[in-house]
Image (cartoon, rainbow, N blue to C red; front, side, top):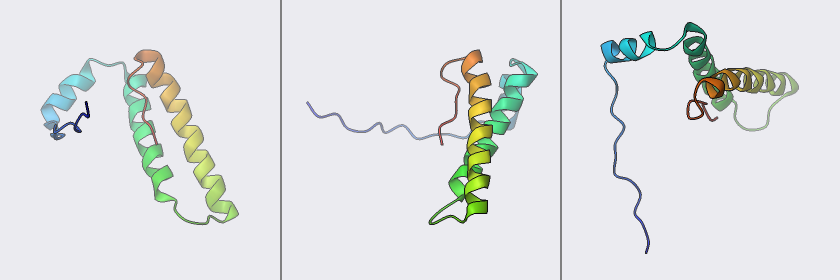
Length: 83
């Protein structure tokens, strides 16, 4: 049997609900989540053939993402951000 893709549509979380969820997490986990999100966005910003400086910047962003993901995975296995 062939399954169809999920028809669930992501819905934005209101700010107050996000703040309530964030208040339940330790501060270092929240900071790691922010760091992982920023690093993943930076990794996605690099495209095409990269010069040496851009490759170094991309590697730094990947390293920051890996550091943040270690903290997130230690807190909960489903929290890490994928690039």
